[in-house]
Image 1 (cartoon, rainbow, N blue to C red):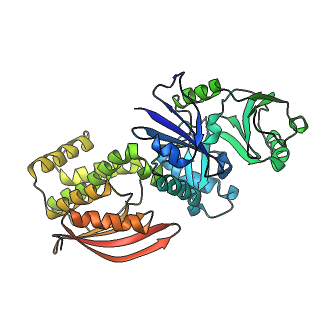
Image 2: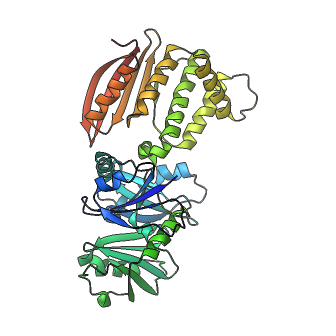
Image 3: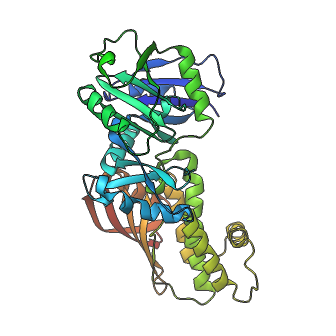
Length: 406
């Protein structure tokens, strides 16, 4: 599928983009303009968005090698808490896929900033499949740092998943501090890409490192596109933000529907259900839940072999025959409405006596909540809204849903 690589800048009215089919495409041409102009060229494309690294903290921490990815995701935020200026819950943490020995790399960005980027893209008709920090625009090489300067901010990549971006007025001091870090293997020099049309306010000769400057050329853009093919970068669209990724939304909704339908299968097998709390979006935790529910649905099974596959087959059969309880029918209609809305289910309860489904959910805006409710009504569902409040830049709402719209 054709891709559109879009670079956001500190100036939200100005962006750069390039389209390409192949990672080694020689004909890719860099364009500049507004987000609206970029959106017009994004039709039929996956949109990869590069965001300013000045809004992101890149750091690392030593953790036991035996910890799983899920364990790291729970533990790392507390391990680096002393490096944060605000509370842990106000930040979004992304751990590099391949930790280097016992040193785990992590990118940290304020949830407020993530929400702002997503809102900006949405308002201009764009949906990102990946959001990539701008340090990954730069090459990585042993004993060499790479950087570029734009709008009096310099971005520098120091290692695979490490780097920083800072105002030029503080650049000298920060480089000095980085060079003095314990156990750091210092670089031989720093290569800075410059724009021939831009006048720098930095005297590169005064920095505490040897600096080589070279103009940015078309070939450098092609090299960047090739680097993306290696997957050696952090994608910020994970965790709670994974739902925002169009390329992953169908799979994510299928997993959500599967987990909810598993609860219906538990009811059918004689179990009681109170409320299902979506405490974790992590695949490992979900797989464990699926295995546990599999044992409840098939108590006579001696071995749990591919529980997901067997339960997915059950769901397909229900879908083909149109069978299942009102609970499953409600879920099916809700999923159809979710496809058109950016809705995240936080908590769910089901009352079998009156066939009522209660949802607590999160949506980016009140307008999208209204759209979701209208889509439910269009699916012949009766919807009552018990509350809707704006909290930390998103809308938290509670809905009571029954079959049979008015």
